[in-house]
Length: 158
Image 1 (cartoon, rainbow, N blue to C red):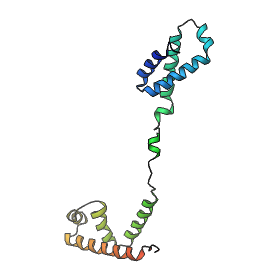
Image 2: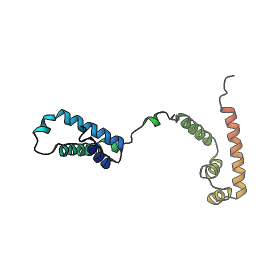
Image 3: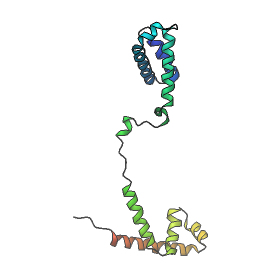
Image 4: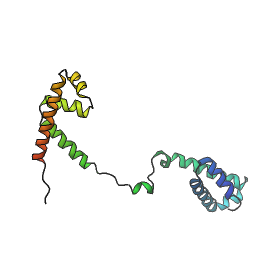
């Protein structure tokens, strides 16, 4: 082990570009050598050659395995809190219901000015109506939504 460990580590580190993975491969290579010690003494080739071949095969096996094809979640990502998207779904349903309570004309104006990010002038041009009409519809639509939300929102218990 002491005779070949440094050469194996240098070789596998060069192949993997990762010291920790290289150490794992060297450890596995030496374990396999220990399990097949009789083969090492009976073989006609060199022991180092056999060890380097085993290490290379282990590197190839690791690169072909799912280890490199899929994202590995490390311990640093396990502590991150993931937001529950249920609140977003409920909010989207509520907004959809509120938009459905508007007339088509009022809803169109809000879709163009808020959801599509257009200016009042751009919305007027797209909808083919005067700028003042867009402003008026926007005002009344928002006023309706504010009133509707106030009466429909469940109140928190005190």
